[in-house]
Length: 113
Image 1 (tube, one colour):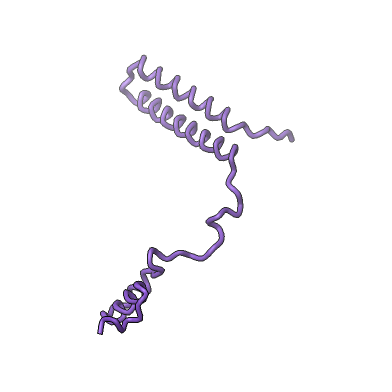
Image 2: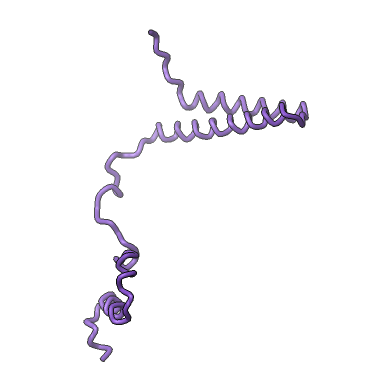
């Protein structure tokens, strides 16, 4: 069995863009307003989307992302103050919220009294 080579993304993008352009010109010249016109317009949109995805694939293929990027390792950052939503939900009393606020400011909480 002969395996066909996978077409290059740039070639697919060019062919799809030319097909979409040809359909657009045909729609403008023929000025059809029936079911065939709708089908041609949908096919034009489909070919335009294929061209866009192929261009994106060609760009990613030229510059692949590294497997261990800078965002892959390291601790999870939980917002601007290091608190997540569950912690804030558990801290519903005024004293607990005041203690967190004081800890964030760097004081020991005894300066208010």
